[in-house]
Image 1 (spheres, rainbow, N blue to C red):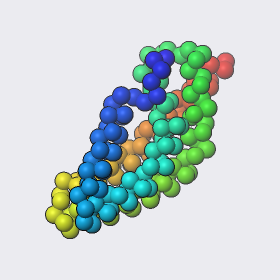
Image 2 (tube, rainbow, N blue to C red):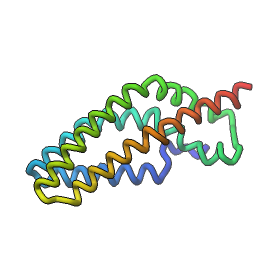
Image 3 (cartoon, rainbow, N blue to C red):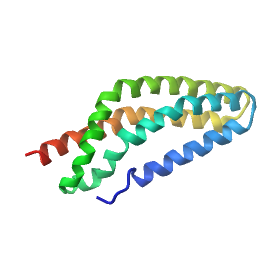
Length: 150
């Protein structure tokens, strides 16, 4: 295992989202206020993602190549915690999406279409996490459990 806790592409994307939200928050007005609310509801969620949802994803390329090593077992507990926290994660997504819809509306009203499109992009990202990334992280743990514990 390479020791990284996040796939590089996902880490870069999340950093870009974070930076763009901070830029939106700094512009003031309704858009800035709405962006600050998104940041407020997003912070605790990101901590959970970084702890349980994202780390197992780093193993996907190796697992896809048929590589399974005993030290990968540490991701089983992370995957199991994600399963336990999934309801909470999805509830947090509802709050985040509601805040993003407000950002989209405020940006549209203030004729800041770039921020409205950005909010839509984040909504789609949350949907992708629910449909692909979270299930994949759970599958990593389930797969490792069957392979390492045989």
